[in-house]
Amino acid sequence: MPDVLDLLERCHLPQDGVHACCATLLVAREAGRVIGCSALEIYGTVALLCSVAVDPASRSRGLGQALVLTQVKTSRRCGIQERYLLTETAPAFFQRLGFCLIERSAVAPAIYASVE
Ligand SMILES: CC(C)(COP(=O)(O)OP(=O)(O)OC[C@H]1O[C@@H](n2cnc3c(N)ncnc32)[C@H](O)[C@@H]1OP(=O)(O)O)[C@@H](O)C(=O)NCCC(=O)NCCS
Image 1 (cartoon, rainbow, N blue to C red):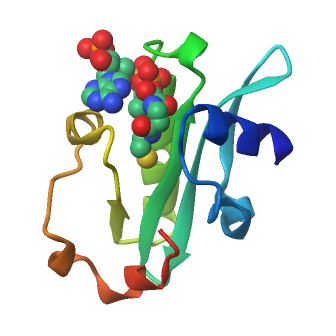
Image 2 (tube, rainbow, N blue to C red; image 1 turned 135 degrees about the horizontal axis):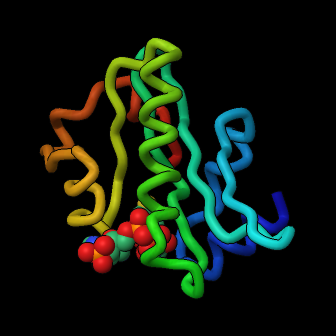
């Protein structure tokens, strides 16, 4: 967890919610170092994808895509029907992976429980 918090800080992402989703935290490691992460906050049958980050030195190698698509695949298998995320920095990145832009008012109400 300290390595994940450090990575989130270096990627300028909030650290608040990540402790609550330890069970879904996925990390990429290289030579013992955490170089990528992603997590899911689960609210019944919907979930919020959060803490998607890749170390700047390891970007553009497909890690970000793998960290997102693995969460999508695993959560589908576990019965999660909808996945949301909030991003101010990378909308085009997520659109390429199948996410689409929606109004905040269209978000499933359960997601409002999230700190994010
Ligand atoms: C977004 C992020 C996770 C992508 O990680 P990555 O390992 O470089 O991703 P991939 O290698 O799978 O994909 C790279 C592609 O995504 C594109 N991309 C990367 N960041 C992008 C962004 N912010 N907006 C749009 N496209 C982006 C790259 O241009 C690259 O495109 P190419 O393949 O045509 O060259 C990484 O840039 C990051 O950690 N950013 C800071 C944290 C952040 O903004 N997280 C998302 C918000 S929750």
